[in-house]
Length: 494
Image (cartoon, rainbow, N blue to C red; front, side, top):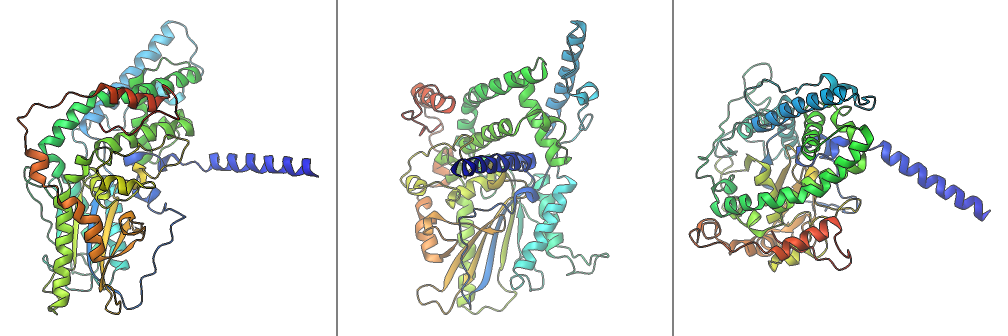
């Protein structure tokens, strides 16, 4: 009987594993190229969201959103055209050498880049328009009391960067938010204002572009990133070479992975480039992208998010003003009820870090002490830091300010939503519903000691320290198993 139980248990494990493989959807594993709809409802099942107490009403909303799904940039489109040319060359070479082409995917023989000949790139895709439009409708339906006023640009300011895909996203969102509220066309649309700062001075939404220190550091990191990717790409190149008997290079694999992300995200096509990779290889490539996002835009270096302090200040200022309006019994329509911002992954990721989201264990205490964090765990280990959920296309953070007059300890609370779902804040005891003063003291205030101009523009004429090769060696040992995994250090800050 015991033997039968063991056999049954093994069968159930095999069945569950095969089911898990069958459920694998590459469209959820494209790092920051993931579409919003594929991942927006992926949440931490272990977290129980707060019940908003009776009598609490929302009085203000802050939105920080990434633009919707976009087409590849011109540089990336050229990369895909180069890939098409190289595939033709190596197929021709294989034929001339009378090598077998039986294992070569059929679509390789006549493949051309879907974006061949396009003169422009990086613009908002039709799928991105729909994402932002639906997000606007969703926000209005979720918070009807906030959007019951007659539209005024000072009541519902919409701010965006001057990059067309961001401003187009703001327009699509506004069309959803105010649909049925006007008199224009069958959808009863109404005109609304969208404002932006000059790229050269936009320290609120494009702080990364105005921070010379950050740009200098990032440029110096590029060679290290290339070396970071080499062992991963080499491993997968070797696997694909054996699988398809095709003379791939590391650059081919990098370009094919990029093509997979574009096909799956923009074209809903997963049976070409994506089918070349096993789920385990996709997980490794996704982790490679997530790791780079961590180092370049996230917790990997404190400068990445501390340069976003102007945005954090802007958010808190809007909440203070909303509280003043409430306490002063100002007439509805005379004060702001929502501040809506549309920008980029380089905006959303640092802002997410400023809030302390997606941290592991004691990481929040470590960033408060300005200690470097461990890198995201390598597959198959689980990790919270995933580009597909932290900053997919149309990814967003919403901070909703609530008035709770019956609460004896605090009248005002901040409810934090990520991709429209409540998310725990380690700085507020792991809750998503935080007393406003606690939010300011524990989460915001520690960052405010860092001045943007000092961080980004001071001492630029001073000689920069040479890179610490010891740390770089430690990084490689940890990433790729060079040494004892139990003792290798991976608290390196690039």
